[in-house]
Length: 370
Image (cartoon, rainbow, N blue to C red; front, side, top):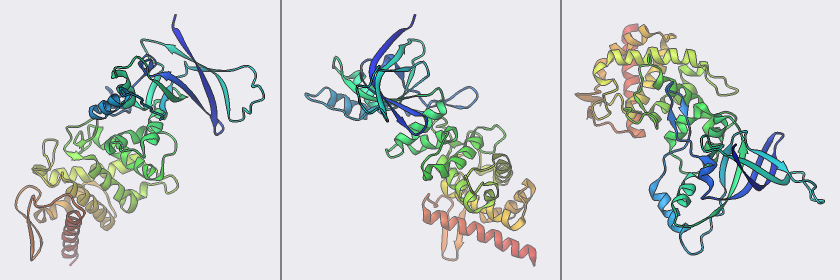
């Protein structure tokens, strides 16, 4: 029989259906009821969990403070409980207004096999108190009940969106979130979903090449791919697959275009592309290269009115001599020549490369038309 932990708590309501619970608990007991859900990918390459690794330096600083003479940590931890946790309201309100909140008890199972709670916010504080040389340290907690890990991830992003959470972690979690997010994050959800598919699908030309939290060996920065995708969704070939009301992008046709184009890139520049080719060896997998070639994809698509692999391949092959991804020099103008690796991942150099590739392509188009 499972032992139950019963704590005094306050239930308060937000909106028509949301229920939140506030209570205090000795943080030394927290590991018995809640765990940290580390971000990883399961055997099917699906995102599981959402928390970043523990930050040792930060934990040590909190632990030292907890061990000091008169510590106080007023910030509440946030915990998501599964539906095994129940709230029982107290009998009678004694004339107290219960429109928004009511007193009662929260019953939590002490299950050693499967903990009922997941720490959404406060993992570093919890780890610090766990390791601190103190007998007990009560902490305030705000909790909600859900069996949906997608909702837990959404709340994790919302809680941490104003803190220095690693950007790459947010990018990897975005495709699995549900509900509305702040506008800035909402705009990145569709590109993040496309990035995930590009990175994980075996037939993708980017297969496991994009460096993410769960794929740290990737050679292309996730932010570079996101910038390329965002630009095309905003004002390029991928715009036609975008729902202007929701910002969602129809994945299937968008991925078909991306696969056709970047497979053509890989065929035309095989020495500059691949999972073993790093930005030090090729500026094609460098941030400036990815973003600039994304603009060229949009330019070719707009000019041709077609997005098939053959069209992309022929047009890219025709401008191959204007590129110096791994050797030689970039000829940006009569007085502006750079060694192949002289390009940096800056806005200025990226714009320079964008204009160079677009100019080379349009000059080719003029010669073909004459």
